[in-house]
Length: 274
Image 1 (cartoon, one colour):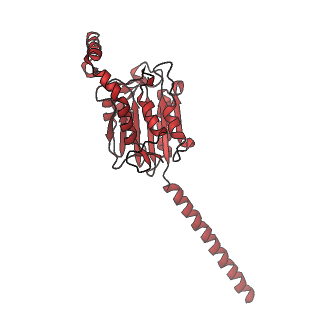
Image 2 (tube, helix red, strand yellow):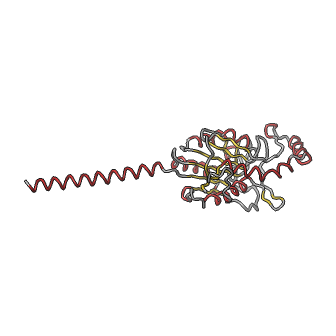
Image 3 (cartoon, helix red, strand yellow):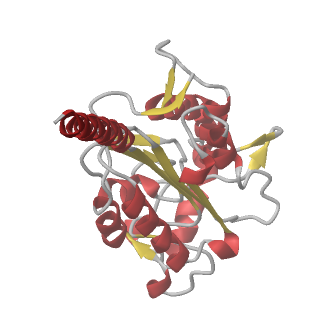
């Protein structure tokens, strides 16, 4: 009888231990699934051969405490074909969940309808706004930030806006991107946004450098450029030349590269924790 009681007690203790272990494991798995992560894809295609800052934006975030290099993809030049970019969007879709923040940054040529991957030479090689938006909408996220550094990104960016999505655009609705140098500066939207992250710009002192704050910083850096570009002697000849060579009216711009924003995220979008 005593042996039976002893054996039963051992079984009960064993079951309690096992139950406790399984319970702890379940809790750990749940915490892991609910953890907020940051996922990023950085596409940069040199539009000039001597570009000194191709990985500037990527490097500005890789050292931030809330970013993990294993959650970041950097696509540059021949590694930034249309297929590479589409694969990176699939990678985000497979990894991100509704607790995560997603960033997709793209710097290259573009217009109001298409953005241009590496060596894009035909319509099939470009990424149309409708195609891009469909891919972005398929990704699960808590918040998404898209950074576009292309000509006429002001209109292209309007076409890819979505719920809980912030789109940073390098131009007005009509305007050329700017990648030139002058006065010892490199006039690039990607460069200025990366500078904001490196400097941990925090205008409202909430210990976060947000997407909105990085845009504000870039706008301030662009003020001198805008003043120069607004001078009619600079942009009227360009406009006339475009008309004479038959550029469709819908593509005409006065070249102003002032950054703009679409913001469908309720609060400020966190990108760097300070």
